[in-house]
Structure formats: C-alpha cells, structure tokens
Amino acid sequence: MTKFQLNTRAIEPEGLIACPECDLLIRKAEPGPGVKSFCPRCRSMLFHVKRNPVERTLILSLTGLIFFVPAMVLPIMTLNALGLEQSANVIQWVSALFRTGFHMVGIVVLLTVVVIPLLKLLLLFYVSMAIRFKTDWHNLGSFFRFYQRMDEWGMLEICMLGILVSIIKLKDLAQISYGLGLFCFVLLLTITLIASATLDEHKYWSLIKNVKSFNRCVPPEAGLSWKKEWTKSV
Amino acid sequence: MDKERLTAREAGLLNCLDCHMLTTKRDGALQMRCPHCGARLHLRKSNGMARTWALLITSLILLLPANLLPIMTVTYLGEKEPNTIIEGIEHFIQSGDYFIAIIIFFASILVPIFKVAGIMLIMISIQKRWKTWLKHRTLMFRIIKFIGRWSMLDIFVIAVMVALVNLGTLTSITPAPAATYFAAVVISTILASNTFDTRLIWEGA
Image 1 (cartoon, helix red, strand yellow):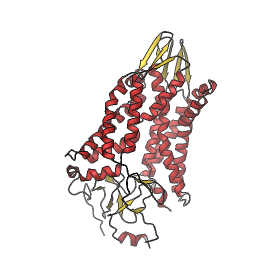
Image 2 (image 1 turned 30 degrees about the vertical axis):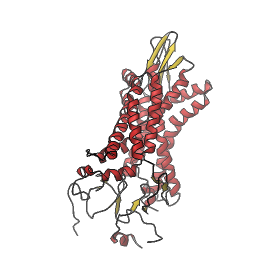
Image 3 (image 1 turned 90 degrees about the horizontal axis):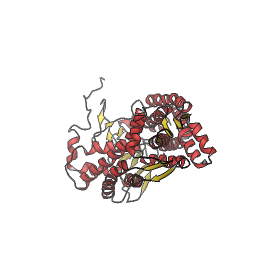
Image 4 (image 1 turned 90 degrees about the vertical axis):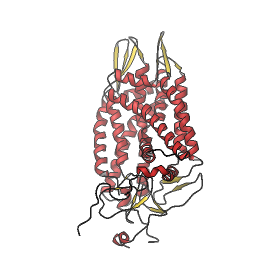
C-alpha cells in the first residue's frame, strides 16, 4: 500500500494515539492505575497511570510551597575558619555571583534554583486546584503547558549534588555547620521530585478538557488555521 | 494495513506534543492549533535539523574556552590560584576523593562531550539515511537527554563555594571566565536536545 493511498484514506483520530518519539499510530487502551505502557516500536513510555494523581499533586505542591521560602532564605551552611565565619543562603549564592561580576551565571542559578522551581510549584498548585474543585479559572491549558516546558529547567536535585560536592571540597579547609535551610532545601527537593513523579500528564489534560472554563482559551474556530486559511491552487 | 505499521504522518494526523491528542491535518492550512489544548501543531518540530546543528556547533565552540580557561580562582593569603575544570579534578584525586573526582569528571567533561558527539552521530545517521539501529539510536538519545542537565553540577558547586568561602584576607573563591562559558555549553546542549525530533530517526526507515 503506497503512501498516497494512505493519505487519501480518512483515518479518524478517535481512539488512537501516536508515539511522541517515533510517530507510530497505536490504539488507545485504558489501563488501570500503576500500569505503564510502552510504544511497541521504539519502547518509549506512552502512559504511566497514577493513583489519585490530582489530590496527591495538589497536596504535594502546597507542601512544597510552604517549604519554599525557608529553603531559600535560611542559611544552608556556615563555614568556620580561624574564628572567621561565613554563612550563606540560596539568595546569597546568587548575589555573590553578581557581586563578583558573573551576572550570566548568577541569572542561570537564580532561574534554575529559585524562579523555575517556584513557578513549577505555583503552576501545579493552580492547575490541580482548578481541576480538583472544577472551578472556572483562566488559561488552565496554557499554564499546564508552561509547566511541562519548565519541568526540566528546574534543577533542585542537581543543585543538591552541587551542595554535597562543595561540602566534601570544603571539609578539609574549614569546619562546616549545617543550617536549617539545608533541611528545608532537602525537603523542598524531595517534595518537588515526588510531585513530578505523581503527576499524570495524560490524566491532567483530559481533566483540563472537562473543566468548563477550558473552552475559553481555545478559539471557537479551533482546528482551523490561526492566521488565515490558504487553499492550494490546483 | 493490518501488518504494515502506520505513522500519524502517513495517516494525515498531527500529534500534539503537549496534550498527546491527534488532529486531522487540513489540506493547505499553513499553521494549525490543537483543538484540545490550543498548542501550535507541527508535523515535525520546525527546522529541527538546522536548529539542532546550530546549537551543537555553538556548544562545540563554547566547549573550548569552558575547558581551557580557569573556572574559579582560589585566593589564599593573598596568593591567587586559578583552576581549570581538569585541575579541580586533579586536586580531588590528590586528596584521595576518587568518588567525587569521578562524579565531576563525568558531569563536567564526559557528559558535555558525549552529548554533543552523540547527537551529532544521530543527526549524521539521519542525513545518511541509515536504516539500522533505530531502536538503539532512540534509546541513546533518550539517555543523552536525561543526563544532559546534570552537567550543570559544576555551576552550582561554584555558586556555593563563592558565597561561602569569602573570609576577607584569609581566603576567598571567585568565579573565573570559564564559568560563563560552561553554563552556556550546558544550556545550548539542553536546547539542542529539545529542538531535535526523534521521529526523524524513524522517518527514513
């Protein structure tokens, strides 16, 4: 069967999904909770159905938000050497980079450790609240999409490894004492990781679609071209 | 059609990469939006190959200053000692912290180089229309994408050390030019793996 014939054949998208990594069409199944399904051709993960994704994500994002400010403001650790003392919190890391003239690096650290993790938690909380209580809130789809795009740029876990490496680097140089900030930081990091693990993107999208207000952010002529429909001259 | 595998493109369907819903492609429509979530739809990520090549070449160029210039300067009792990434790893080996030396070596040197080389290999394989190792190439890309972010490790180590080791005349640590280049390498490699479309691997086969 040639591609031309396939093109003329009207295939309805109902009940089908396509693998995001190899474009293979697959019949949609409705697996139960905890089930992972993989693309038969390229083995990428298509679905991972989670248990109570909305409630869990809602609670976790709220908990994360509570720990966010202390994790950023309380001192992570204190360095002691010959009676001199220096402690620093996350905000001071950024300001130290700015002070020494490395603005670009400072901005990267500010975004990946402070701004994006905060945005991710806020967006998750907002979207989960709206879905859970079926309220009429604006731009749920756009916000959730923004969350998906931001996801990999939040680098709390990498930052944690950075903290560990610098502890080992500094342990011979001076005495280190750990602050309450480190405790909050570890909690924030753990909660963020669990929140993204319990999040079920497929479920969220189908629930977002169900929330009535969702119709607002899709123009009525959705599916058509957004600028101007061009027709081929034959 | 029963045995033959059909892709969304062949079926005239567009897959929304945000909400994973399929939409029938309209003839002649230049730009379509997903009717389910409102995202812009593309058959393949737009200008995928060109953008990925541009970002890969950028990161290759940036890798040179990132590895050759000093990444931080340690000042001890007024004496300045600039350190490159490799010198930092040597310090760890000398002080016996082999585990940390291996982690830093992986995150700062091996991963960026392997990432650039790996994506380049996949891109060349697509342009040469290789029809083998499809599954393995996709898996390789998945691994590259997963580990890429961890190269940022060195930047965070610098951020922590600079803020903490600031004890006036006794000792202080300041970043050095390679820090900026290194951050730029990591960001451009992450962007390169984001603009690359794995569906292109399967297209020619």
